[in-house]
Amino acid sequence: MKTNKSLVIISSFIFILIFILVQFTCCNALENVSISASKLIVELITGNDLDGEAGSTTVFVDVIAASGTIFNDNATATLSSVLLDPAQASGTFYQDIIVDQIDISYSRTDGLSVEGRDVPYSFSQQVYARVPVGSSIELDFVLVQHIAKLESPLVELIPIGQEKILKLEAHITFYGKDIAGNRVDPAAGSISLWCADFADDN
Image 1 (spheres, rainbow, N blue to C red):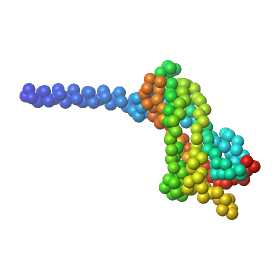
Image 2 (cartoon, rainbow, N blue to C red):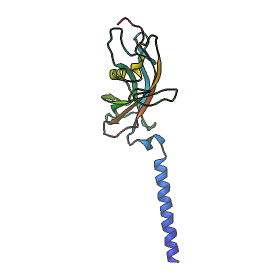
Image 3 (cartoon, helix red, strand yellow):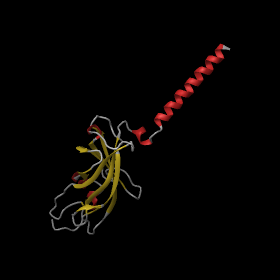
Image 4 (cartoon, rainbow, N blue to C red):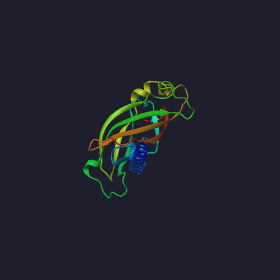
């Protein structure tokens, strides 16, 4: 009898403990993927339009200038930071986010995906940008490396008697941590690229 009572008491204790843990871990799904109290948000990604003007939500990538020069294609991301807890009116300095890395990869709508043949190679770049909680910043970064224009598939777009266009999707992931050193959940966004040897006067 004593053994049965002991088992009942232990089982009850375990049940209560599990219940408490579930209650504390299910309050906010976003908090389960990050130990930081802050969240990074990608609000907008833009690049150059067909005239070379910044601010376009579709980027036109010129694989080579009329002069024969090859350039990087850059983009600008508008990033903001918010608190995960909606009941917290304002954050502290330690909840500001430092963005420290950007990953770029590419895809095609036809499903071809081999890097260095069907799409340019993915790459990472180290950055350092502070995003205060409740505010937003603009962060410039390299979207297409100039070296990618000397490799497949972009090098094949250099004049072959007629203009050839390749459409790509660029996928950008931003990584960071708060001032206290806690990693935040990565934030991602995408933008369309139209790649060709466009006519220009440069």
